[in-house]
Amino acid sequence: MRLGRLAQLDRAPALHAGGHRFKSCIAQLQKEANMSMKSVYDQRYLGDYRKHLSGYEIARWEAVDHFISRVMALNSAKKVLDYGAGSGLHVALWEKVFPEAELHFCDISSVAMENFRAKYPHYADRYSLVRENQAKFSDNMFDVIVSIEVMEHVEQLDSYLRDIYRLLKPGGRFVWTTPCGNSFSIEHIYGAITGKIEPTNEGYRRWKWEEPTHLRRLKSREINELLQKCGFRDVQFRFRAHLFSFICTYLPTQRLKWLRERLMTLDYRLFRRFPNAASMIGSAKKPADPHK
Image 1 (cartoon, rainbow, N blue to C red):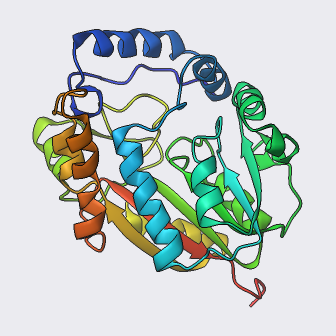
Image 2: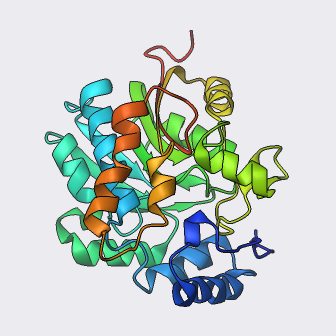
């Protein structure tokens, strides 16, 4: 599948960081417009793509740490897969929250895999490529599968969820983060007022200012329905990016970087049970007896 079109981008929150950076983003997106998804990510990982945590990702890191450790209490998992691991941005987080686990990784990008293996040689033999919507691991293998900001990118959403279900042991947990399409976040209100929310071919929606590999923005209700259809149960959510993350996109990126990074953590800390958010964290369980 080709990306096919260039998203309608302007100086919206996700890219509001000065004219030079904006023009660079546009040039890159124009280059990628007719590439396959795998080729897009191979090209990006040849550069500096997702090598370092940004302010928004630091806030997500803190929220995921709390969700796994305090909300779901999954720290004792013995075998964990990072599905969509890229070049290993979250390895240190998984080592922290899963101290007893054997960690495994997968992605569609062979360039990301090579970057990962160079940076983390002790995990080199635990990285697998995803091909034809399947990670090359055995059925019923993992206690926990984490997938950070992947659900909005996959071309075959149902196949992605079913592969995760296949890989989990009975009783295992799927933990994910993804942009959230729920109503009444500041980001949603901005998009609605300015006409920057568009429908997708799947019947969902996306923000027009997002880059083209963001194929959809799901509501928590829709994710729950998709997961239940795949066989998952006990679906739970927490939310972030209600207000402060939006505001902080307009702060100067260098002089007030420290303040921006701290403010972005407040959405989860203060409002994580409120669904009117632009980002979500969730967990779903594969039943101990999947045939019941």
